[in-house]
Image (cartoon, rainbow, N blue to C red; front, side, top):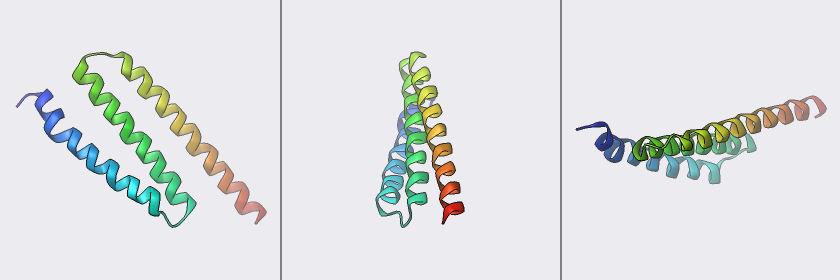
Length: 91
């Protein structure tokens, strides 16, 4: 079993199942914080899928897209935590 078989038959199915489970948490999340964490995890799983596709297709251009998505997800999480902090101080 080489690395491509491992990526096709193990990693991608695990990522697909994790997307379904995290999306269910995103829809059912009892609080807004749970939904934001689930959205951040969805983006992280998407970055993993892009990385696996980049490895399989042997094109490093997709890694740049993954890095940009990671930066956007990080900035979104920081903005949300700033919002929660301000909301707790005011309320």
